[in-house]
Amino acid sequence: MNDLDLITELRPEMPLAGPAQLAHARERVMAAVASEPRAPRLVAAGPHRRRAAAADPGRWPRRLAMSAVAASAVAAGVAIALVLGSASAPPAGRPSGAPSSHPGSSGLQTLPARLTAAQWLSSAATATRQQAFVVPRPDQYVYTEGAGPYGTGKSRTWQSVDGSRAGLNEPAGLLPGRLPPCTVAQTEAGTCALKAAYLPQMPARPQAMFDYLTRLGGPAPPLTAIVLGKDLAGLLPALYLTPAQRAGMFQLMAQTPGFRLVRHAVDALGRSGVGIAWQDAGLTMVIIFNPQTYSYMGESLLRAGGHWQPFTALVRMKIVSKLPPHQPFDPSNPSSSDH
Amino acid sequence: MRADDAAIIEASCAEPDAFAGLFDRHAPLILRYISRRVGQASADDLVAETFLAAFRRRQQYDTTHRDARPWLYGIATHLISQHRREESRQLRIRLAAASASEPADPGHGDRVAASVTANMVRGVLTTVLADLPGAERDVLVLIAWEQLSYDEVARALGIPVGTVRSRLSRARRRVREALARTGLSATFKEILSNE
Image (cartoon, rainbow over all chains, first blue to last red):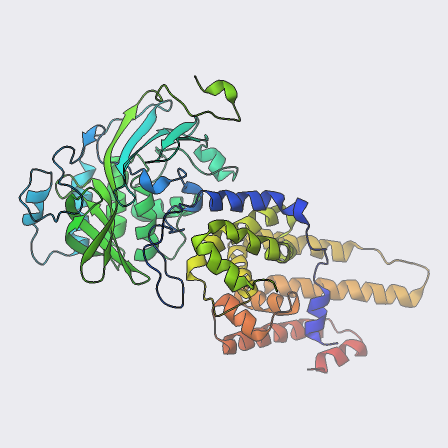
């Protein structure tokens, strides 16, 4: 018997747990498994599994996973009721080179040739901070309309501003689903996954914002382009951000190495904007912003050879006061639907 | 023949539901490991977080490793390192228990002495464990409590095997020094000289 054995003797003895003791933990894990988007994979490469943008488990930070097919509900931009690229958007797939009436194209042509991502992001932060903002009431809803994944159909989502009310998710081509309520307080207590679309208590200072998101179960340090890009790709479409928070996100990206600028990035509606790109497991992920308003437009994948695989596009985000009249049947609360 | 862990993880990339198989297979083990270190109150949350983190990273899993337990131990250990307060509290509770326990049978001198000595040693060892730098405690516990091999610990913690050895040997030296300071009987001197 040596010193190592003595340490082993110190080990608390306990039997292995049975299914009953693990039921709660299993439920939490399987809830995340169940809300995983099940789109077809874009890429299957190499002996090691590569992340495919569609089935990306990291896209939605675990507790910030907003809705079941969240990737298709993309969040908007800067001020409420800002409608981006509506009727003037070119058909999906057409390159952005054509002179067009959609917003932002003139902005692209004025980008200096040697502009770095950090420089663009810093300007975006400064400009964004000045933008107008209307504070929503807690009992209202953040309505978002988006296209994707892959530009397939339109999706709509109604999220409770403070997460205290059930919301509604209408993914493109799928049955509508109820979004169960879950406030920040409940998320911090670990009882459910966050469903609040407005986080006024989230700090706007870059590092403090990152720490806040980490505490809510989101990105984990260290802060790298892969961690941040993936998380912001999930948050930007889903949160109704204050101008200061949006500026903070731009600053956080500006001070994180690994991001590069892509001119003429294309979203799922074929609209072009400024892309902020990073490498993740052999894929180039790109978040796309409107070059004039700096609002979030969508997300794409840039494949080898310069081929765009547009993924999502945000059409609009605004504050509304009510859910739509026709609700999906909710078996847990039969009186909630009106038939 | 049942599927190995790597096959389950690979399948779960396209079919997320398959991940349940990995949970059912290893959650009891990981829960026990976490409970041993931070107590049962926090363990339920942490085992869920371990498997949630594993699920999020499943597409980066190196499928040449057919046994996923080191990978899971590594994730759990990382989470435990963020709960140092709970871990310290657990060790302090056990320290209090060690010093408070009564000899089983006060009537028999030898057994009393042995029992008191055993409690004292447990107290000393618990203190050493609590005072170890986190990185050394992780290695010591994974080897002495969870019976992982050096390779498995290296894989779990993402460090070279040489680092596993050096951390273990530093931890063991502290254990031996602490025992030496107790000035106990010849029995323990034998223990200390036994490599």
